[in-house]
Figure 1 (tube, rainbow, N blue to C red):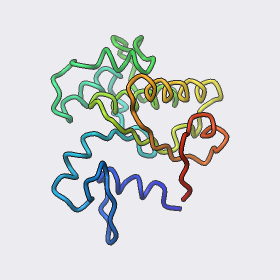
Figure 2: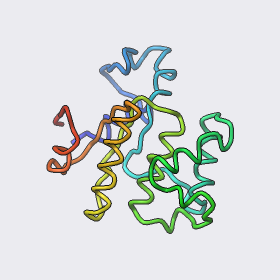
Figure 3: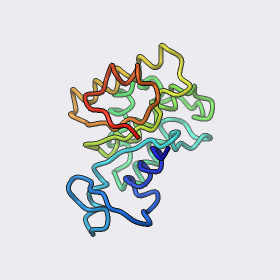
Figure 4: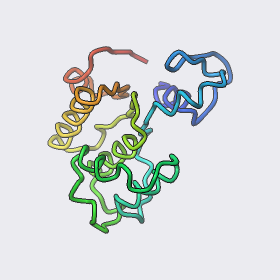
Length: 169
């Protein structure tokens, strides 16, 4: 019904044919929108990971893409998402469980120290234990880092445990 399309518009993955929106007060058609998008992290549909690379190498690649010094925050973000045990593990991300891939996607978002993270259906396909862990991770990041989240989900019972505001599309 358009949820992923709106997320793609906000993140700049696609551009609108018509209409406008603002992100952190910057209109989508302003020259400031690229700078403002640096405050945003997103996992759209599924985490964009290199399946043939380890968690560490995926994060190192994301640092290069973001123009961050290599290794600057990798240890911290792995710890933040509960994947610190993967720091030196060479296991390929393609062999990770869905929950581990979601955590890695969130870790990749955290490298840029965002103020706002967009998660598109983050609970889909996860077992109940991992859903609780992802929920607790979101709440922890909100509480400790003051990161706001936009979560697209059809699992309203889960959203009721973490959301403070709702929008329906």
